[in-house]
Length: 467
Image (cartoon, rainbow, N blue to C red):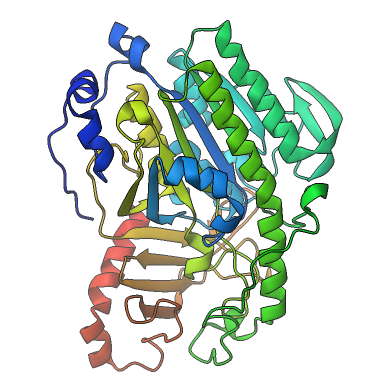
């Protein structure tokens, strides 16, 4: 991967001398300050990290307030991805900055594989941050187990209405719509800043827009903009696709229904984000709060007949991704076209807080000028013949994508087994075929593969998987 860097400057010098210029730039550079220094105590930002559930791109209609704040006045990453399009692996990557093959949470049942000493809440709490979790934690996590390194939490047993929660160690039912409960608990946490001068980290994780996609009552009948699919919906000729996609049965009508239901649940998320902005403004903390918004994965609206996540096609791994930090020069409204991912969140937060992690990370700080030329996206099948996507890994660039499928499965602990034999391959020219309709490796000759650069892509993919 390419590494285009420029010299870094001190944070105080940056803020004093170049804040206005940096706000207009897509890729400002900010250096680290030692976490224990007086400068760090004065300048370390608060951290508000919002992770939604199963939210694909092209859902901004439901988020006008969120995008007006975080995109129009912050940074919109137009090439945002997750490195594994599944909830628990992706969230573990958000928290650690590591690929799933390095943090070990390869499926939703393997959440206890995560080394909690490598997570953002552990580093931030150790550095003197007040830490809070409000919403979903990790799939398969036992509700009565307190989430490590959070001093204030309301842990949700996934659901939308009258759900079970673990509130600071007490399991209980709280009646009401869960996104609103998350909002109110977070607002209470933010209010504590009036009496507690420590910087804070709030990890906010609503269940929207995950199935069953139950909207708040006031939005249940909301009309959403018409949508008549895209060329990949449902793609009638899938003869060049792997067997599980050839056998997919999703229809345009199903895709339209999923989309409408997702948008309605996200309307309450939008209200929630606006409430956070209003509270930060009232507290005088809006400028020096680093806010990051991302989804844990995308979702198919019957693209290629698929109405789930877990696949190497763009709707599953491309996600909305926004950032705002006015005091860091990121509050003027910019578009960043770099290939970015969930693995970049932990390095970004730690960089802003002046913390150097003790564990190795795969992502890069978005506060640097680092720009990758491609990204590894990976997925493991859990159990043989599970009815989902087989294990695959993919080389994703802006203009092309190369995917390999393997004879590999994982068990409930995330342990991998199988021969590793290559079973199927796909190559898409994303510049000319953005909807991934034509797999150029289907019935390709060796000469055609050579012309596509497949040997080099295969070698790079193997190296990425091993790194």
